Amino acid sequence: NDLARSLGLPRGDAVHAADIVADNVTRAIDLGRIGERWFATVLSSGFDSLVTERAKRLRWPRGPLRYNAAMILQLASLRKLPYVIELDDAELRLDATLVAVGNGRSYGGGMVVCPAALVDDGLLDVTVIRGVSRTRLLGLSPTLYRGTHIDRPEVDTYTSTQVTLRCDGIVAYADGERVAELPVTARCVPRALRVFVNQDSVARG
Image (cartoon, rainbow, N blue to C red; front, side, top):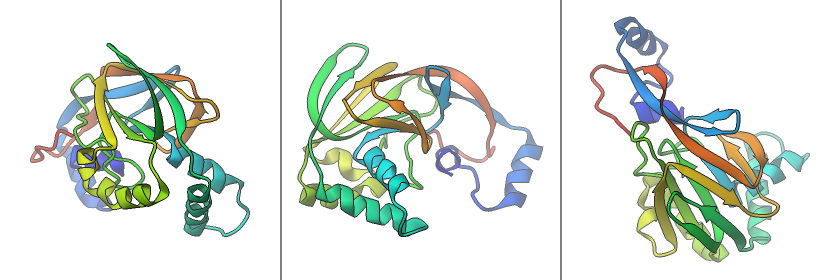
């Protein structure tokens, strides 16, 4: 759904989607690659991946409430995470709450964590939410759906063709799937995938 959103494709409308296939208008987009794993939207690590890991360990409650319960539990044990982030032209050492690497703009069903990301620019966008308090993190949450969090002083953004993330005890997820424990290296592979698109759409992000 997040990739479809980035490409301006219909979600939940099978007839419209079939019309787009029939029109046979295609576009080449970039993909991210971690070893042999590919991703189209966002590689996430830090608070959000810790929540997902905790949710998988919970036996109760079931369904979506399990994730909510895991988030509350993880907030209670919130701590700064010592990251090393290697970009094309810099190495950053900082305390972070969350680090996301985006080929696309959004993840998690519409959280616009990398609002400036374009799927065809040959670059990965990196969003770093530095170590913040529980109150500050909760205050940031609504802005993630609007993409306005990047205007906050505790948020930094970068672009790079390749990104290496290092942080002990943290797992990376990409396109919502568990990838591996850090360190991981993601690189942008330009024009790696051709997709059907709406010929009337001008969406590039």
